[in-house]
Amino acid sequence: MHFERSRRDFILQSSLVAALSAGVIRSGWSQTSSGVEAETAFGRVRGTEARGIKVFKGIPYGASTAGKNRFMPPLNPSAWTGVRDALDYGARAPQQQPRARGAADEQGATPGQVESEDCLLLNVWTPGIADGRKRPVIMWCHGGGFNTGSGAAPVNDGTNLGLRGDIVTVTTNHRLNVLGYTYLGEIGGHDFEQSAALGVLDLVQALKWIRDNIERFGGDPGNVTIIGQSGGAQKVSTLLTMPSAKGLFHRAVVMSGAALQLLERDAAARVTRELMAELGLAKPTIADLQSVPVDRLMGAYFATVAKLNAQRLGRGFAPAVDGTAITQHPFHPAASRVSPDVPVIFSHTSGEATFRADERLFTLDEAGMRNELRARVGDKVDPLVALYRKLYPGSTPADLYFLIASDHQYGGGTMKAVERRSAPGFAPAYLYYWTWQSPLEGGKYRAQHTIDIAFAFDNVRASRLTSGAPDAQALADQVSEAFIAFFRTGDPNTPKSKLPAWPRFDAASRPTMVFSRTPALRNDPVREQRLAMWDALGLAG
Image (cartoon, rainbow, N blue to C red; front, side, top):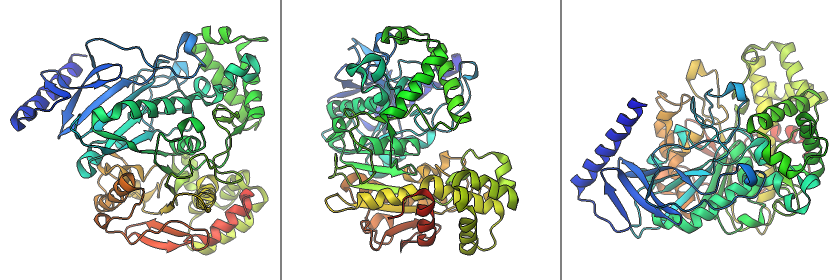
């Protein structure tokens, strides 16, 4: 604790010296011995400054979700008097088994990070406070499925985007798993029809906070991009089909996680019945559920998930189409037309499936590879293996497994989503395919799921996949400039990126930016595997 306080004081004092040396005096914010300050609609906050970027962490955008607020739509936070410290990341949503807390998480949690139902918090990086500038704003939706993660990952630090592109970055924490996505319409009636969408309703609440407050932080509420990867991409997909989110954002980025379909209400209700059985509640009331200790609730959640997995009953604790908060699936059977005027970038990588892969998968033999794939694609395994072996000669069984599993889990759905979103009447959609491979451990992880985040944020030194890679920064220069252009205008084309012209996607030519050591624009670059995977996934036609 003493070390942390000393470190914080050093940062604040260094920021003060830098500001005084520069003669910084601006209306609407102040630099004091305690750091930089800014106003919000709920009270004043104190942050820090580093390299000219003002940073505020742990700002409340909603009230605590504990007690009577559990399983309820988000509410505004209570106003405070004086100046509230916004110096450290706040609590993340409950997400770990009660006896396992304190573990590190690659999607934004740090060892020992506090978990709490008082988790509706956001973080802001900005080049200026109330300076009359209207900078593009991005809101990062963290990954970890709908179950884990937080907005505290170093790779999502907004400093470099602020310095390179004059961008305001916001990252968020929001409700997850059982607390964010339990359907209670059968138990509580109409008032709880939206309970399977609370986690994404929290994100709508964060977007409202941005609308009402971001000008004070130098941002433009009329130019907001929602961006996410993996589970974050699924959240962005969901926001695209939510009437309550319409007009609160103006561009979207869906990185490796386009959600074609969400849960149906009946499936969500079945999962809730399993949860109630684990809790031992035969005729539960909302009051019962709001008073259950959070550790007991989390224990029942993990037991329910284990049962669903063991019996192959499908997924649960994810957004459901409830007819109110979420009126239709994001990209099925066609793209939702709730926010048709929003340009969207979609992406997938060639090595998605190495992410958190069991170590045995890296040394699969032929029989093991086929057995693993059979669990995914059934009787399609033989033609798929034959095709990918032809397309990638010299590949090991492990190589083939990861290529096919990556397309099955992410690539096939992404390519269908962008096709549907590029239909007439929509703003431009763009597609990129990531093939640049990490050199970590001799290239073991290929073009792993999450690899492109560091390039988009210009944070390649912060990621274990890219730190030390000799060509990573040069590629990050190109990728981040394209993202910045998209954040600014809705079009990723800019001379600063030194990329080939990147046209909007259309289903006939399927133009795709391929990010490799030498990025190139190619039409339908994985045509044969796309068609084969669509057949395996039932997406043909």
